[in-house]
Length: 316
Ligand code: HEM
Ligand SMILES: *[C@@H]1O[C@H](CO)[C@@H](O)[C@H](O)[C@H]1NC(C)=O
Ligand SMILES: *[C@@H]1O[C@H](CO)[C@@H](O)[C@H](O)[C@H]1NC(C)=O
Ligand SMILES: CC(=O)N[C@H]1CO[C@H](CO)[C@@H](O)[C@@H]1O
Image 1 (cartoon, rainbow, N blue to C red):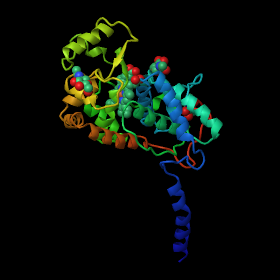
Image 2 (image 1 turned 60 degrees about the vertical axis):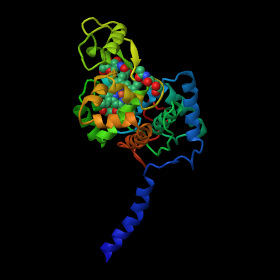
Image 3 (image 1 turned 90 degrees about the vertical axis):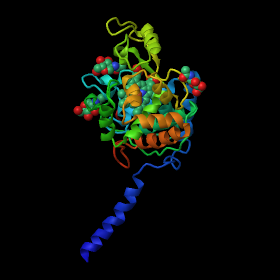
Image 4 (image 1 turned 30 degrees about the vertical axis):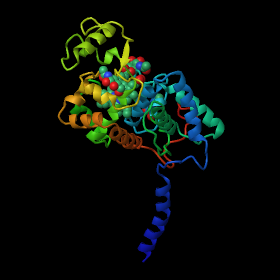
């Protein structure tokens, strides 16, 4: 009897807490009703000046979520004698930090200590996808900011991964192969620097279309004779700034810039997903919405975990 009562009382207290401590669409509506509008306004301003920010934000969101969960750990600046996640090799060219800073500044004015940096990344990414012609979607919020940022925790696939190698990392983050192929569709916008694909040039990788290889060779040189370390090119060589399914059509034509991108179209495990998305734009968009919302739930901190950072670049 006593036992049952105790269990009942414990449940009475735990159940409501458990249901509160979850992501939900419109999490800030009660305490900061303009939160999503403020983020959108900042993103719109930057997008109007530079349409490539969609690529920057998508990659920022991905790298944040796959390292210690979507908790803004990627935004922390290194300190003397203590490097942060940002300075890990894979993070070299991640960008978009100043957009998050600007939104945070306005949000701290409108509603101090309320909106997490992790949610700002998520919302800004969502808005920039829409602005680039991609799908519109409602995204759940309520993430809290993490208290750890450690380059040793970075375990992201490299550009020369095979599909199986990349999938190992996606699977360990709870994603299916279909979802991995879908999320790599984000490569429909954004750029890659020569260093990430130069090893494929000069005829070294026969899976790359010869004309593309020759054009990229003019930009980057060849493995034995590199030039222009800062050179960069669009990952989708056709509709480079539009969030569409053109990436899949391009890799079916051997126009993939990164080795992993091209492999998606060649590997028998992923080829079917690629042709499906290439042939059916709405199915890619729907799949992308589901997959990016799911990616945004990776290892999130909610409720009283973590903190709401005042400055996205430093722990409170
Ligand atoms: C196997 C998985 C992946 C690999 C190996 C990979 C690798 C890369 C590499 C090497 C670059 C070039 C970066 C540069 O030169 O600045 C890049 C860019 C990019 N990646 Fe990925 N990526 C992967 C998955 C993803 C996912 C899941 C997303 C988002 C959902 C994503 C979004 C982007 C975007 C948007 C860019 C362009 C960045 C910019 O314009 O600054 N990638 N990726
Ligand atoms: C610094 O070190 C601590 C303790 O090891 C760690 O938790 C933290 O995330 C590190 N990074 C930064 C940038 O402070
Ligand atoms: C580029 O994209 C347009 C619009 O989707 C398409 O009509 C065209 O065939 C594509 N061109 C190449 C070379 O892939
Ligand atoms: C821009 C940036 O922070 N690049 C760093 C990426 O990681 C390598 C290896 O840790 C550093 O040497 C770079 O400075």
